[in-house]
Image 1: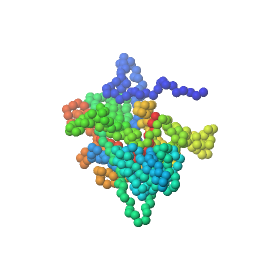
Image 2: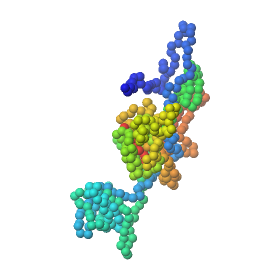
Image 3: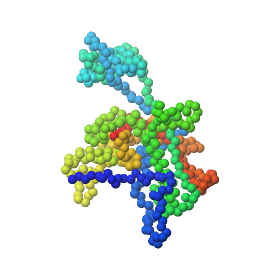
Image 4: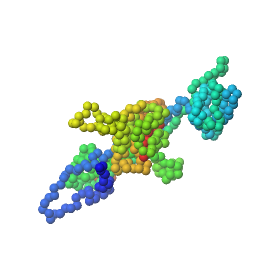
Length: 477
């Protein structure tokens, strides 16, 4: 009979970082009438292991400076134009000439003399023709269209063909005629993001700095001692470093009519210090400019085939990494294991020449199906105090293309090679705000005021650039 995971006791979400000393921080049961010294463990037990989640951006991106409040870049548009939802507006049996209209208020960039491929699933046919006239229209205000003369004697029926797809595949001109009329301009998409200022601090009084503790504390960077503030300061630093990554992943710009956006209007009056404009994080960018899979994890090859076919229509990046939570990782392992002919009755997948002394590998690190997919667990999505167990608005994973791309950097004024995912931080010759830390107060070696405390300040100003978001995939609950 299968067992059940008990709901209690469960994993602890406390103790959380506290602003003051509590009974869980220090021993309180001192009894001087007891002649026996209690047996204490001086070493602090690290029951949660490495608690930091910052690693994702270091693995997939890079950091580079910027010296502006706004980061702008351009991305290439499509080389070819394909119109969908084209309707047949007239039928002329003589000479097999027909007029087509694009979707409402869609402009037409086809030109006379070009040859066009037309297909309708409803009509069950595809036809080819040469364009004889064009109505340009105006994007967003008037509808464009075109007239064709078919190469065949067939044509579409007006009443059943409202789903026509059209694209240009070449051109043909009669002998002795003029050249192509009109030309097409390159189409770029211009994008931007704004750096966000992130701050934190740790403060301790001079008296507490000289207070010896009974627990020998150790921090993830190797610092040890019996001074409790050493641990608290280091945990503040670790927490801040996690915030640097989470702000780039979760960031959201202020929407119109939002509370934060109301503060945004103050920038026009010169009081920019009160602005809460937000920033465009990874999840926001992929959800708005990329691809989204929702309704459960892809668990069979057919699901990944749909993802692959979408990638074919985008940048077709050969290598991709999927950063996912534990359940999504299990689902992919089970999907790949099911492809083994012995998967239903044994555990032969993943290993060759098995014997009873060999550990059975029940997991996969990646697979190839049209593209190369590598998977790795993302601690941020598994951490019990962060995105783990989030159902409403939950994220199960994100697919990130590997490599870099060429973009036009408006600060440099030239094309530059950039990773698809990278961080830009504010910096100049006199001020570097990538990771700024300084000490104030009058204790612990600081000598900036007569206050009897030491305050460690942390600051960073940064933004995430998601280049080619159409090549990313977001896997949602």
